[in-house]
Length: 120
Image 1: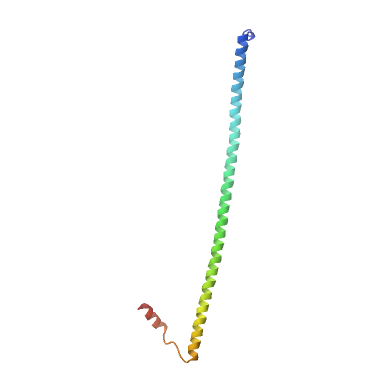
Image 2 (image 1 turned 90 degrees about the vertical axis):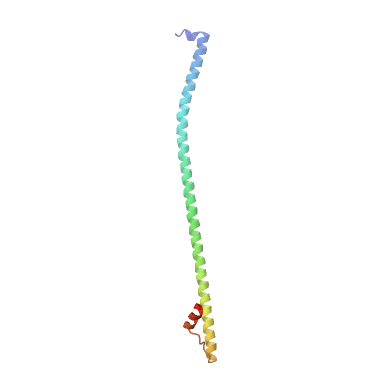
């Protein structure tokens, strides 16, 4: 049998066979290596996606907190403005009543009269 590999055709067949075996072995090793590498990339991609999702959730939480704070400030300003308007109105009413009392006059319209006017 070894005599076959001693002649030139045997050498070529042997070399081709050795190359085929080396190629098949390399493909088997490469497939196993790629599977390990791909599993690492999958884990890395999942980690990156989870980090991005967490960052987006934190950004949304911060934006919601900022919007809530802005709304609270605007509400406080609106309430202060409304209270100032009420105070101004009360002062104007007192001032007008004082003017009427200084002239010995009074407003003859009562709350019942005002309600009646509003309904009719």
